Image (cartoon, rainbow, N blue to C red; front, side):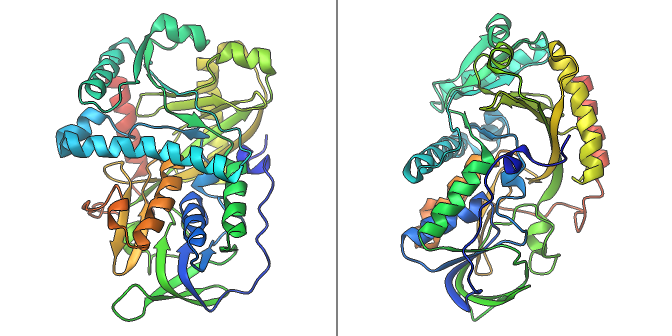
Length: 430
């Protein structure tokens, strides 16, 4: 079993064009994940000189290449809860931002001819207990009654059982606009498109310090390979642990890096795979310590979840893989002792309200905090922030949001074990 991401291991590695670090650019982007690459593509298309500065040895090596492969619409938290806090109009706008985000991925795949197995078969949110169906039914009712999403549909246990070969589920809520793709091949295609349009991509270029020049948006970025002056800077770093807490301390105090872990089976063969998940959708349970799963184009089962509230590392990933193996066996016992070919973990850039944050502070633009729901929103926000930096302030669907620091969070998240215990207790008592 490889302790490596299936997405990156089964995709061609993007090779940046060899070039010196530029002394000056119109826009410097810190982070070579989906947000940074998408913004670089949009900015380069309009003629800006762009440098993507990625600390790691390859693009999309963090959350963008280490997720479950879902491209889902719908908020990461319950729409009704959000509407109760901020009002129907604002909650509706945020929900529709996720619809637009899936559309953005769809559009870029078609425009740039990216071969990444993109498909829109929907997402099925599954109830693992009978009493959870009332919450799903209420969610569906509110979405329809408020004119937010009239395409959602409640499936009873029999209809779920007809497409998910497991006795664990009591029904589900179907979101029909959701999709899925091969994250590694999408990353390769997105980076290639950005570079083809004129953006420079520099891997192995960690930004250690950012220095403001004057009172505008101009900054000087000090990297491991030299200094770059930029008229504008976009921070697209997510929960990365690169760069220390100096220039990034304000953001780090507002994001908790939580590990999420995934295993991928050996190829099951088409007949066996479709018997398991006939709808080939993305699937997620609604527990706090939940599971998510889907099939790949080569008929493997991708099965993930927050198996442990811990930071990803080889030892942590292996321990989490064994927990996921047990969860997989409980959900699909008919697979028996199926071989697991891949196991890995990654960091979710979780915010306190589990919603993204994007805007400008001290002349720096930023977009991050996707809270485990980011493959589509990160791509979308790269495009949106490029528009904001071009003068369209209204392009940011998350503008004007307060972002207070998380109390007691000044460095590594020491409190994760307590958070994990709290959520496991909530699941037991639900």
